[in-house]
Each structure stands twice: as structure tokens, then as C-alpha cells.
Length: 240
Image (tube, one colour):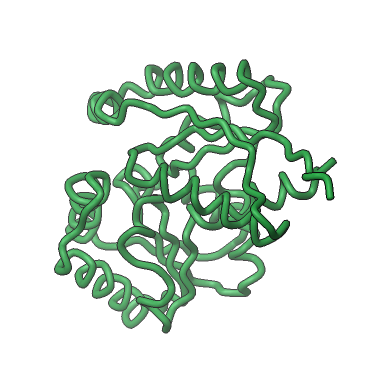
């Protein structure tokens, strides 16, 4: 039997290396579930220097970030990518603008997220992520506008804790058991006090720390996995 000819998925990696490998695995596993056998995705990955990104974020240099991300998309397009996938919620602040006017399809990280939220029928959903994402960033805005759900965020002190774990632990590919416990405590407080029915893991690295089995009482929306599944759907749907 001839092998399917899959289109090439271009992945703008990260932001950190910690999630790039797991995301690549998620895409390949999703393609294999759909096609069977030994089939995996055709991919190109453009990695970014996380240290450079952090320095620009801390300086508020979003124009510089946009230029940097744009250069990575340029390299993917030049390499033959037929779909561009951004794997970072924070980089979604610039990705839509970066993709304007390009002739290559783009899968925004919010598309599969909003679809999953709408399918769930939930009305009040908590959001964890970087400080940018939790403080009214593009992901939060789009979820509210497109789904109509109430997006609930942690207290300022809790945001600091969540952000610290991302930047000091998860992006370095480790976490302390106490950090996992604290994330779960914050999620459960939002459920108990604010009526949160679900939780958006609005930083792709967070899925390395907590996932649905850790929080069975809430619907967990892992943006990394949702994005990987949607990319696999797109590719398999165009098999020649």
C-alpha cells in the first residue's frame, strides 16, 4: 500500500525548548492515531532562542518580538511549510500580525481552544498562563469575544506564583511537587469561590505540570494538545 503524502506542518517552536519536543510528539502521535501503521507527520520546526525572547518581553519590546517571530515564519515558508502553527500562547500576541498577507494557511492557537470551549457548553472558565496571558492578553480577549464565556483569572499574588513556576521551573524542564500542588490549589479555589467549571492551560508548558487526570472535577483545556490535534486533523484531511 502506498504511503499517504502528507502536507508539511511548519512549527514556530516554544517559546521554550521544554515544550517543543513534547509538542512534536503530540503532533506525531495524533497523526499516527488517525492513519495507523508507522505514519507520522511531515514537519519543519523553527526554534527560537528563549533567552532572547525573555529579554525582549522584559523590555516590552514587542516590535522586536514580532520581527524575530516573523523571521522564523520566513524560514518555515522558505522550507516548504504548508501550514504554520504557533505553539506559544504568549507569542499569540504577535502571530496574527506576523501572518497577515502571507499565502500560507495559519492555525491560531485560539481556534481549537475556542472550538473546544464552545463544544463543552461551560460558562465560567479559569485561565492560567504567563503574566501577559493572564493580564488581558490576546488569548484571553479572543476566548471571551468568540465564546462568550466568563474568563476567570487568579489573584495578583496567585498570578505571580503561576508565572514564577513557568519561568523558573517549567521552561527549565523540571518542577517541584509543591509547585504542582499549588497550581491545583489555585484551580480548586477558583472553582469553589468563583464558580470555575474548567481551566485553560494558557501556557503550553503547563501541561508538563498538570493535566486532566490531576483535576477530574474540572474540564481542562490544554492548549498544546488541542493545537497538536488540530494540526494533525488539518494534515490528515489533506492526504493525497
